[in-house]
Length: 309
Image 1 (cartoon, rainbow, N blue to C red):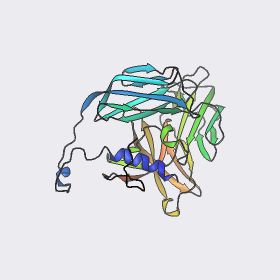
Image 2 (cartoon, rainbow, N blue to C red):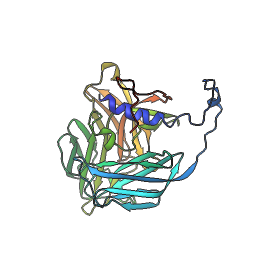
Image 3 (cartoon, rainbow, N blue to C red):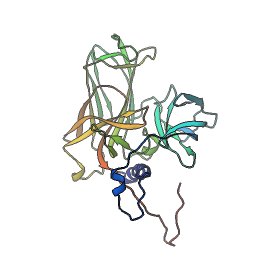
Image 4 (cartoon, rainbow, N blue to C red):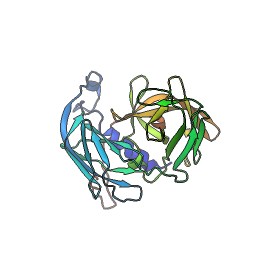
């Protein structure tokens, strides 16, 4: 397990916590009765969009709320007045030949830089898989050891729910938590989640997957009401035996809120975890942890402080 990736998300999330609690004596008794309310502000957001090889991507559609723009030739974009709720902006990046991704920004002094890395929609062994199948037959899509099972006659048009007959063009993207670019490619950015009972948590990812289904003219398809697809996640290398729980929650990414939402349970079966989902989007196999507030400093051997990047 690449613990650096997990720490990155954990520290980013912790920076959001307890901002409304201030007790000079060091205890947290004031927090128990603190009522959190939404605060809305406008902020300056900017950043760069590239592919997985670091090449700038031009003409990527960037959306935040009702505002849109496109990236320049060098992959740059900006919003002068991005609507931030509780110091947080949600930004979506889309390009026809790439998997879309949503990133979140934590505002610092009225601005934030949010970069995105997009994965091309072509077959890359162990990472992406592009395939075609008939809805009447269903399919099992494999991306390395990741497996997505789609039942026969389970798909309808996403926009109106009308029945679909014909060939399905499927794109699947598996994101291994040990990937070097994990924190840049994943949706969100800080691994924050909301449980089924509404509790805020941070997540330790065992892997993520996005599945996109379209017809021959690029109209999106989705599971019909009552249908379910089975996801089978491989256990990533480096996870210890005490991290191999019998059950781990499944989460989907809420594009509007910019956070992970608990949806179901995956059960351990040998070297994998399997669970069912009711719609296709980004899904994440994660073990939740309690949020905490961390205060400290990072120094080098000469006792000099490292700057924050």
